[in-house]
Amino acid sequence: MGEIVSLKKALKIRGELKKKRKVVVFTNGVFDILHAGHVQVLSRAKKMGDVLILGLNQDESVRLLGKGPGRPLNRFQDRAAVLAALSSVDYVIGFKEQTPENLIRSLRPDILVKGADYKKSQIAGAPFSGKVARIALKKGYSTTALVKKIQGLS
Image 1 (cartoon, rainbow, N blue to C red):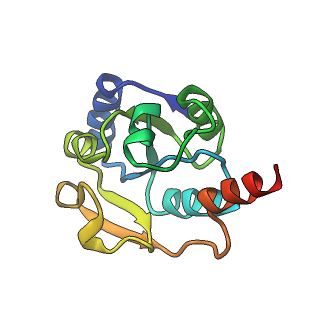
Image 2: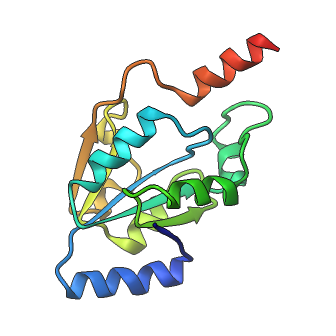
């Protein structure tokens, strides 16, 4: 089971992992309603290294992204707890900004992973990681589409 950590603790962990020559993978997202597409991306990201650190948009950050009224549906602490319970996720760390660039700049992951729906030039923090990997997304899975579908039923 993963752990929800502060930036201070994450930096300490990152330093220890670097000394042990462990490959640190970083990815990020909102993960408002966890679905099979998310699980697949996280599982594939974890397989790229020894430790997966997940940057999670805090609630105010989600609102900055303009995901729509009432978003996030699930509070940060609830989303973080669900993600930390996944076997593929070692650490969850929240961030308040619109992008995790400052977090990535601080942690300097060996591999930065995003979905293939992002062009490399659009990936925040790319210059501060050793390598950028893009993962193909599972077709037909989108939290925003799921929210719209649910809203249409009410």
